[in-house]
Length: 263
Image 1 (cartoon, rainbow, N blue to C red):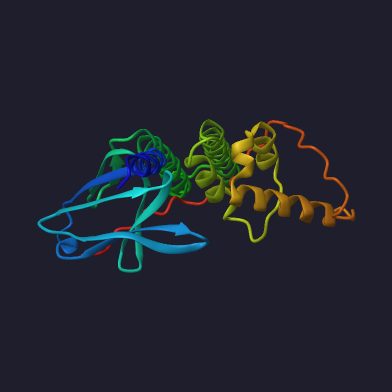
Image 2 (cartoon, rainbow, N blue to C red; image 1 turned 180 degrees about the vertical axis):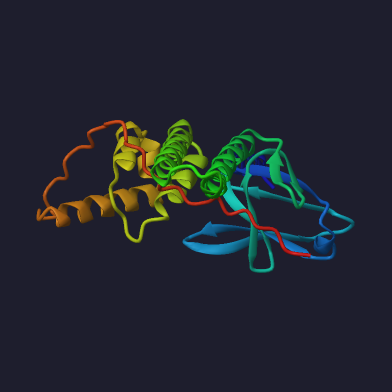
């Protein structure tokens, strides 16, 4: 091969490598029913859920590795059941699965993701305990109106903390893979794209990169059109700018899906 052509080939390979992300996943599980199972890493590509890699669980251990053109959010699957999310990024990613908790550590975005999940689950647990508190107060003979007032005040506080947690998670991750992921989690609870004070606040702070994300861009454009239709405006007219007002507390965050197979 002529030296000139070799240099071109070397330069092309170097460019490809510099734009690629190598990931390596080491996993362990204390759940005996997972042994011998096949696990899959799946991610959305071109609006379809596709397999990125697969492996068998042997003596509670499993591993994945590969190269991606960009950092992305994937899900760990067993057959057709999603077990947990994982950020595929450069570095040594460590997954641990047991009955009490599932975690992904070792890289910056996975640490951020599971810090969010832990905080969100703590708020869910506090909310679930309110029913027990309500019943306990009834048994103690406390006046019903006082019970409702106290329990509702705590529920409102938890809802406000949930919203702030989600808002902060999106804003702090505008320019990486977690921002759009959290935004999709937030908006997935709505039957169709709508604008809420929380969403308007987030979009008023959003960076250009975040606004250009395909899901974010499509959701926000459609939500603005829906809003203008409901107000009786022509959707072809320019939409008004977001106000950037701090959102009121709304309990709009769905539970983070973390499922593990039963014994």
